[in-house]
Image (cartoon, rainbow, N blue to C red; front, side, top):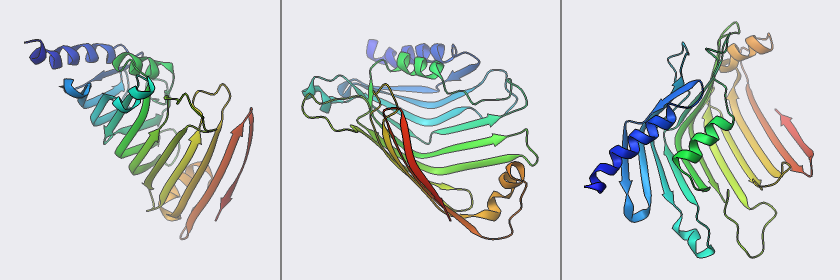
Length: 248
């Protein structure tokens, strides 16, 4: 009986916690539990601005799976994995705070810690989307990176043996507007006091006419044809940053 009731108890508790995020409200449609692998799954996750006028939620995902990383128990590390399917993050810059949804602060970290109260060491995103809308510009800006895939590992776990300079890795790729491709590869030490990372970014073959709304809004220019590619590499160490950016 407890096993049958557990998904409903969890859904009620999670919805109650999501609804307490300052300025935002959230819900999950369904919760699935897999006791044998120490996991539970959220289906139909939606978080939106409480007083917002936009029909675009701040965040939504078809499915988010939280599970214990059993492979790390041999290192006496009790950490977890997350897999998110079709996550959608929409950032909006509006004329007032009721419309603007750009928040990325402790309120989200607190909510995640309450919902999944162990350190996350491995994260996978599939078919995601990152979208930015600015309603205050003329013309209106609406750009996105779609078909987003990301894999992050080593975020929290540490071996007691020899440690690498950058124990964590993040790999990300997606498709931009204008049929461009975005690739990001990063190595980092997420527990460092000062930023400590190596970041490489490649943005290739973006059709410039597809960016005309963005270019007119922020640069006052209009493009009839052409493509854009850019390459970035940055290293952060001991409070210093070094790197380059090459546009073509």
